[in-house]
Length: 308
Image (tube, rainbow, N blue to C red):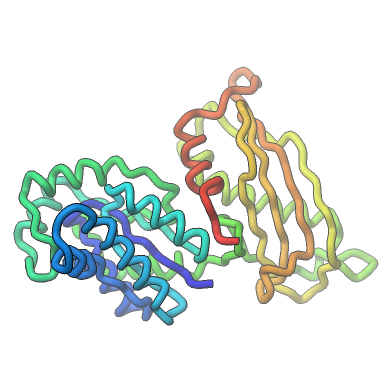
């Protein structure tokens, strides 16, 4: 399965620079998007050029032989959302938000080399960037590039993102070593340890959707129930990957599905599980409805089409 890293941000935020940096530092193949759109416009100007441009981008991703590919987009077009859904159905997709102040972006667009970019007026840039600023996705990484950010820190953050463990079909995954003390007298991992593994993946999921923050808050998750189906015994030594995904959102709760598998064979699960998480107001100990913003984030990350 190919990994597709998508840099999303306004025009002038530095996506092209970051993509080139990613290619130099990690060997990731960076696909320049604007030349593909220029080709589409020159081939047949007028209505439909944008849609053809996105089809060219998607075709370039599929034709690339590298295991990891990066591309750039403002995310401001409806065609982008459709392309993203199709890419997710076939590949592991990582979303990186690239941010910079509007004035900085506009000045960068004015002073960059125009031969490799689609020519647009200041007014058009401002309109595109206004829509780009409204794009809200379940980001895997956010880069504040207004400074701009130091190249070393950007490269390190991107390298860490690419190195994250993955499990097909599970947008959230963690990698853990099986410890000698995890085993019981029968020589395999004790069944109680699986629930600790589920907890680790669940906490990562909470962080990804913004449900846990350093600032705390009165609203938070409570585990209402959890269960596990033990499919195969796990033995020391072994590295495992634990995946988590939301499968349903109710009024005040949501369901999480888990899978545990050897890191070397993540599609061959040793165990599967599920749980129900309820949102509670900690000050009153009462259930509360899932906030609209949290619901939208969960739906984008877990309930949109994903890799099989």
